[in-house]
Image (cartoon, rainbow, N blue to C red; front, side, top):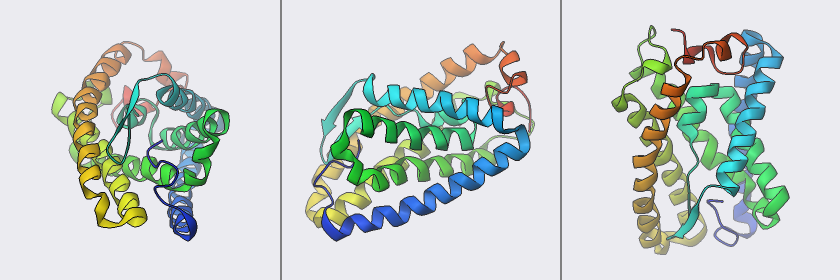
Length: 223
């Protein structure tokens, strides 16, 4: 994942556990609100779909080393727009854990840092969406500029957290490698809004998914 084994070691790993506890606490709050608003079956179905997709993002989609870490096409804004904040957060956390348990056990000591890196930018996307998307606008009607803003917020947040962990573990000597990593992520920022628009376009005529509770109601309906 983003924080490779050895980047942060020893007692410094404890900070990742602390930040992960906070991020997972926010996730639990969002999940409770999701159960209250749409019921447990809907939350569980959307979280399961987001988990499977996250696992696929890690294992199936191309990824390559760049600077201080690896570049992954983790479509956080896409998961948010399709499933909502709580299912997306659960899917990212569980998909990351499943990938570590199944294929990358060496990444498990870094789980706290990695889950923080994925979840905190998602919360920022949810907050930004409330500011840049009018309440009467379903997500299927978003413009390129709006999805670009959400994607940039998510991927930029990922890069920022990787930078935090790299400096925490290696000091400022890691800055050149962080810059290489950040530059490589510009490609992800270019790709993700296009994926978002394709997914939103494909979902536009499938309102039955909202009625069945398989996607966030906001995908097809105004807030």
